[in-house]
Image (cartoon, rainbow, N blue to C red; front, side):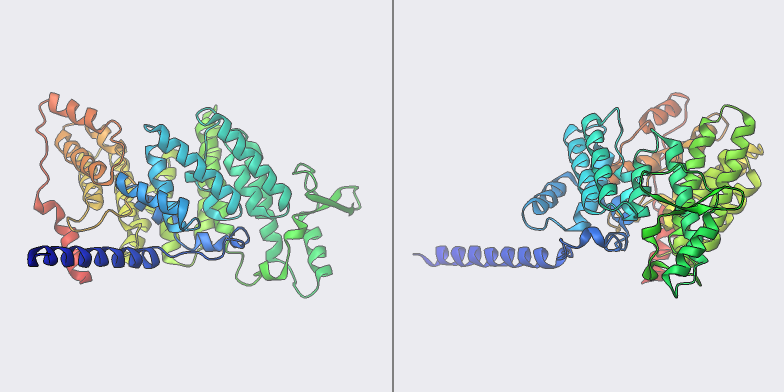
Length: 462
């Protein structure tokens, strides 16, 4: 063998060793492995503590070639790798409308989470919903799986609540009743004396006396009748355990269920047949949001919840409250710049502030907020695809009808770049841009100045 061939052979062997070593390092360290597969269903916090919402939006930016690699690892090597599974869910969720394969994989993941984590908050999120018309047989299969989970753990209110959320659009009243029962139970628990089980039951009887016997089969227990002959019940009795009670600080899950009630009232408001009903449900929606916000103590938790509130207030027609919520959201965002939800919060707050300004016929102010909303989501040139939750084009569409078409063009072009960088669906972006170009508005070219604020923040962090 010649010296040249020996050198080539040694180089190839060295390269093989390097690639093998890197592969082993990636396998061991790139994604945390969960070695507790037999216990995962009873430990929903293991899923919720991963910040799954953040991972979902990271998943939306995964390149297609990497999704195949990650999916292959799940199938063979690391079936309980939750980080990868959640990111794949994000990817398939955004692509299921245009890809039959993505739709099928999304359905599989929904069923997997229901099967393994029925009591996790994340399993009740919008990312794990199926549509009865679009998903057909798989939707029915998921409903059957939820029924089995309820039968397995009938007194777990997260299982019941998540099941009700899954079927909410088919039975809104059942979901509302379930959420209310959960909040009632939490409030009962907050008044409990946890010294003796008998005291626990007695306090529950006092709190829930007189409720109607409209709940799930086997869930309520008749205790007695009061002086007026009114029946007294105990709800979710088996759920009342010492290690679940926090009477001094309040139940940490209460804000979550109040938000569920708020979200449900948004749907009711949109379905309202009269202005009076719309106003009443809108007012109730904001009341639930306010209660939830008051109970949260961590700034990041408030940031995540408050992110969705300004648009709800605007939809109810309460411009003053919408403005206040936006101002509170921007303040929270400023205090949590390093949080993954920062850009989303700033973007959404400025879109709503712009719509409030437009409602007051202040077009110039609306255009200023639209530009701020655009700059909030413009990614750093050196930043990996991260956690942008998409964009709200509603304000831009309204400004397209005014003399601020150039502002709308700039916003839409930036959104187009976001769609390219994150592999989002373009929706009607290209149509809107073409419409503006046809009206004589020149296409905006993104320049370095547009990244100025992001660069300054990056230098500060360094």
